[in-house]
Amino acid sequence: MTEGDTLKRLIDVTERFVAGRPGNFPLHSHSSISQDAYIFGIDAYDYFGELEADFGPVVREIPWMEWTDQTESYYGCAAGCFPLVLLTRLFAWPFTRKPLLKHPDPKGFSRRLELGHIAKVIDQGYWEEP
Image 1 (cartoon, rainbow, N blue to C red):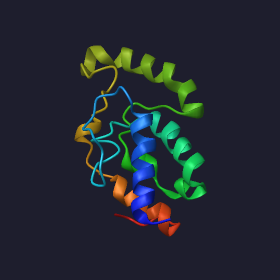
Image 2 (image 1 turned 30 degrees about the vertical axis):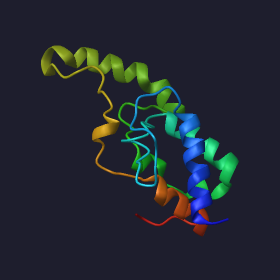
Image 3 (image 1 turned 90 degrees about the vertical axis):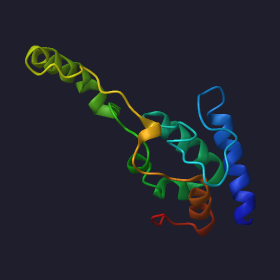
């Protein structure tokens, strides 16, 4: 399979995954999963699960959590701790006036992982920094 075929399949899978969401469409090789496709938070897990079903285990080598906005995303045991986090913030709020919850900003996230690079990783079979 050529890189162009992989990229086309990757774009198709991604566009199906984000159907109905805001984003910069149509997607292309320089589209970023966080800033353009608007994949962030716990959706990143679902997304790479779908990619793994189509492209195999190489998808697990990509450090998704470093390349997508994970602001206020809680997974596994951390989800159980969320009530404590919120309670602590409630008690501190009168003194700090900080927001109780931080809002993710995937379009402003500082790191870009583009679909063209993901296709390259899939084709070569290992992760390398863009």
